Image (cartoon, rainbow, N blue to C red; front, side, top):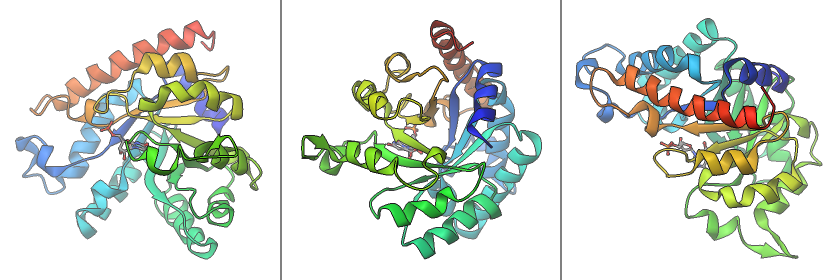
Length: 275
Ligand code: OMP
């Protein structure tokens, strides 16, 4: 999916919400546990309930890999379901890949061609030749970790050299890579204070912002500091939506949390005159 198509969807749904599918079998309501594929059934019900309020889904691959072959089959079914019934919704493989170029090519094939994701999260540590294979596909986007939401972001990403943080250097350097217009960037909602500076470096790029909900990031702070004229944000919440209820009404409660986030997002989109 192109970024222009994503923006159209943002405008029509008045939302820049991404629902994270971090499905832990131990947290699935007990009445689903006897289903032949409880992980898929849980995701399907979450998707059917929240689709009116969000523009993207982000299955985190770890939560599927953890169940071996069975988990991988659940992931394939989730992607088939999304691409068949909700082709307008942007999909993100949260896999945080990137390796030597020859290997990155295979990761790109796996996630873009086999599983038919629109995008994948990638780590910048191995540099340009590890990233460019993810940028060779028209209509696909790679989402580069810039400033992450966790405490460990301080270990490397904020190290200074030549008056700049390492994450700022990652952003600046990445703009010179082939097909850099297909890059988006991850910035944690818990680091919202850095967004104004980041917008001076990449005013037009889409940012994936995880960390609202369970990690305590503020949607308001993120929206005020991160929105650009074309929206430019996808704000993710995973546990805060999918586990809002541990009972059989989990999908309806997830929908009401997603709707509340969507309505707050609509307010900020109106403030910026995007809708
Ligand atoms: P919740 O904290 O449950 O909303 O989940 C956040 C999701 O975003 C998880 O799947 C994380 O792996 C992911 N994430 C972060 O939490 N922080 C980051 O800096 C980057 C990501 C990510 O790339 O999505």
